[in-house]
Image (cartoon, rainbow, N blue to C red; front, side, top):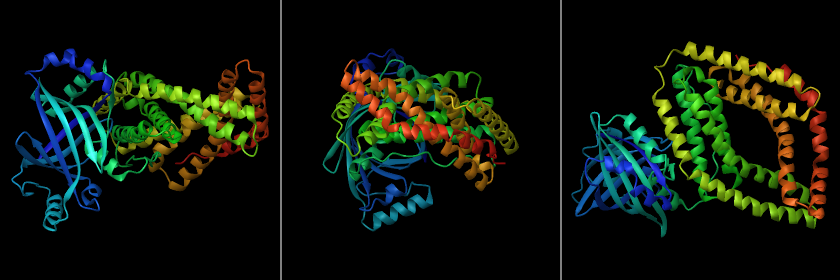
Length: 496
């Protein structure tokens, strides 16, 4: 059995010329090897292998056919490490070299039952460069072609870095050099996963944050690693949807993932390599800002304009909504460009390198001590912000909302260490407060956007005023209920 460790980077189509001239390629130990590859992927009619996260592939390279079996592992930020078994194909599937008994038994059962059939096909040209490294080599593969499934096609345009004995530090170094100037994006989906999505033919669905993956028996380094990888997975699952769909929820969930990851950097700063948090935090904020403008426009449309239009036919508000939709399309175009201009790849590579540089794990007691310290500090900050917001000042309420959100993320991350009931009670109070104060923030963010679109058009300016009037009762109620909200927060008990 071999183990494939690779980093996959999607390359925007306009970046191929710059890649061909990249100075890194001159460091290769030989001229690139070129070949046209055809891959046939097999599964059962009910996709048994897909459910078991097993890929069975026949690859044609020239006159040769190779049989490959891969057991997928979760890919984060484009990096994956998974077992694989490869051998020449003689005309009949032979799984005798698969040394995982369960995998071999399943494959032989499906083969003997005659249920395996081709489900999709990939065709691409591959150029492969080899680079010398300590203890081995690193392979750089550039693939251009198509995925074909159920009469549909999707373009393949990607680079893969694969370790062939070289240390993983070399992989990060080479990837970083490429991402510095090329329009790259870390791609978490394999060609097979993308093909199965074509086979499904169903629209992508936004993914919400999962429960905290922290294991109470582990230490602080392991806790940060699992939380960070979970946040990256959350982000990338929704990024794939955002690149295919205009549904606003994908952008919202991507921002949530970035904010959670930023909170994790703050909570676990003591265990991170020196300078890592200071380097990563600005990059996370910059990417979140790119997404934030589009998210603000989506909220403006769904939470403020649509309710104001419900049940009436206000011509000027509809004119305003149409102008905002045009502005949103321009914003979305900028956002899509930002996702594929190399910044995302540079961030993901830096995150992965940080995770591999984490110190040895300490004990579970250290993790619990850290959790108590961080929760107590975040709780104290929130209570202090609540006191400053007691007179209903809008700026103070916005500051309180941020501290509530930080305490919420900390409570969610550390919840496996505490009683489930206590964590649920604390989170319930925090989520309710965040949602109420969030409306005030949305309203304040909406004003500049609406006024910018209205310009000097008096009718549109009057429409902006009517939108504000429509939401005024809810605004006044939230501000009026502030003392009750602050009282609930003051009585909230931290999980222990």
